[in-house]
Image 1 (cartoon, rainbow, N blue to C red):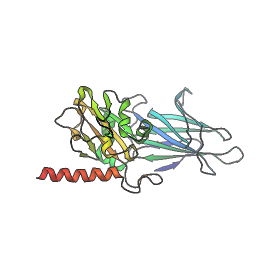
Image 2: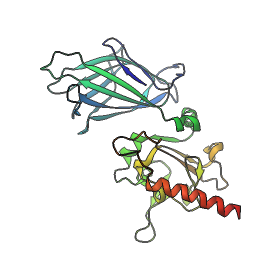
Image 3: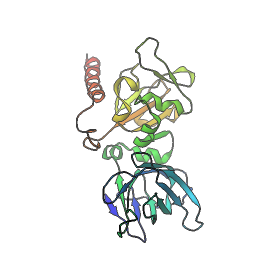
Image 4: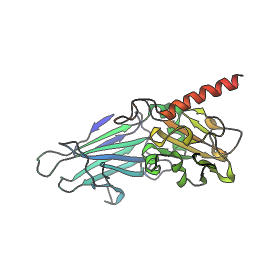
Length: 283
């Protein structure tokens, strides 16, 4: 869903049927907000743009960020509610828009800025990006219950600088990344007590001993759920009581540029592994 915002107000709707707003500081009422700042005429990214999310009544900065070389910015864990977004960049007209952030999911904002030499109105376009696979799997409902650690694509790519999915776990409390025992082996993920949690990919459990780097890169992943011990919900319960890692790959066709056009090597391996596991169990 793409909305072109007026100068007066804007609504960011993350789900088709948004949940009632229960207060900006209610538990589980935070969503990641990211976006792109670009030139309205040329469509090129604008780096070093200042993006601020302000409380509408107190004129207090709630979140702020600066766009990178690709014009991308991230505002982490934004409480649901009403705000004013202010964007400024050198040689461009500044933007100030009212924004209501409601519902669950990942909010992506495209901000089209007008160079100071042109007499045009600036435009803010808000795109709702909710993965249909995540919605069907119950990801957003579990995220609202806040019983595990939930990471969206932007958060995963920000933490996985080398493209290795295991890099994400270096900043997860209670998780440890253990280098491979031999040269060329991928790192292992361990939770407290040295246990290795089972890995699920798109609802299928991988063979025991398989770790995330064996089958996927960070670029293949749309979202992750990480559970430790007794917090593991029903879809990922297992005998090991170590927890679980649930990985959700990108929806086909959702990639940008060449991403998402063809099945990745990792996803192909996951599919073959699932078939071989089924055959092994059958016999």
